[in-house]
Length: 334
Image 1 (cartoon, rainbow, N blue to C red):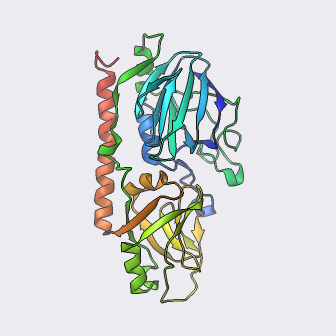
Image 2: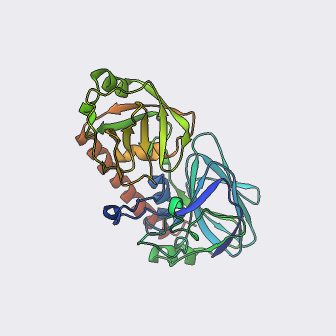
Image 3: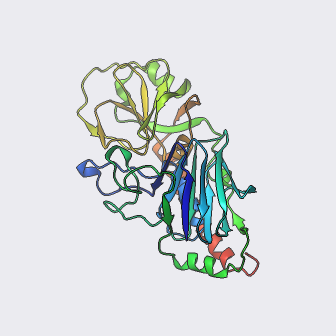
């Protein structure tokens, strides 16, 4: 299976779950901004959950199928068409050779994920296929995708082989299964749950109240490394200096001028600003789909609530694997 990029958009890169084993030597995790959407794209095709996907951001992306392909597209902020025929998002499709596929942004989010049966073939760097642009590392030649780049699929899992084998069509065909993402992740929510950060007590009571009750606006100075948030400055009651310490995706730092910074997938591994909060794992996909001008608020929750939410999320993902496996083996699934 092979494709050729026609229009790469503003920023389209190869991503997986990132470099999870190298933070101790200062290598950022990187990986997909919206891990939920990326995982579901792979699940729909019977891929390994960590298979490489194309992360498409902010603008129109198009490509041509150079051979018959089996792909899935997820994400709340896009629509996709095949030779002008609209296909439902969060669903897998067989697309015949020669077809032109176009992904166009809507208003609900900013990122979509395109998976292919077997995952995209990319040589891993430090055990990951993710692109980390600041170091030109990983992905497709260490850079964003460009027009005329050609990509092919990687090795099929047993389930993906079964999906491909059962297709007898020579025309565009969508499978009789898909995902309703809102049953797992509510992308429309704008109240983001957080747990208190290690330095929460460094801030005044009024600022902690503002964190839990005020609104914050995503600034235009935002990218895959982090979002600058506009708000009333958060004031500190403790002016001691913080030694550089661990941060991760979802950490909320507060700069010296009182502005919060929400760290995202390409964030550094350590930082010297105090950490006022940490977004819980199940609300990170919502953050991944925010765009400049979006207004959010935070709700401080307990660690127990965060753990229960994540446990339920993992159970939902496992049920998706089971559902796809059952549908693939069903006689009327195609």
